[in-house]
Image (cartoon, rainbow, N blue to C red; front, side, top):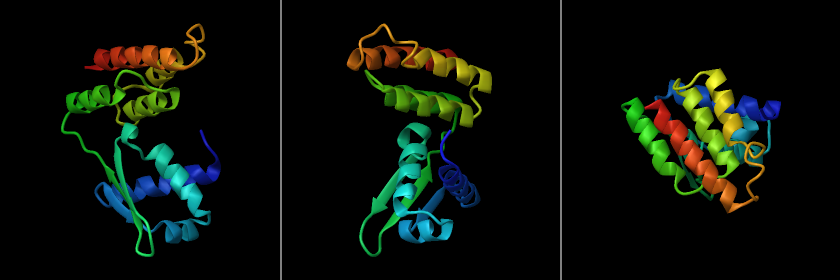
Length: 153
């Protein structure tokens, strides 16, 4: 999926979230030092793996007392989770965001690994190659995503 250091950072953050009940606060520079990487790599992992599309809320404060707060969004039902995803799609969605949402379905046990693979292939740029690059492709991808999610209800 990514480089080994990013994978390790993501695993550490996931474990911290699990142990703390779904909310953690990190001091970016200290965390980077503890893990043995540069602070920008922490930013990359958080923005790519712990974003709204994957069910997280991230707050950050800059400066000497700055921190990054990550909170896992907890849904009380499968339907609430799927409705959240539907509303997050909007009229168009890029390939990276769509992939993150589908991986979130898998992470939350709503689809199998095989179903995830099939869904990823359907929304890929390769599958949508005949549609001119840009907004047209992202609009069709959004419609496909909505259809896939509604099928899971």
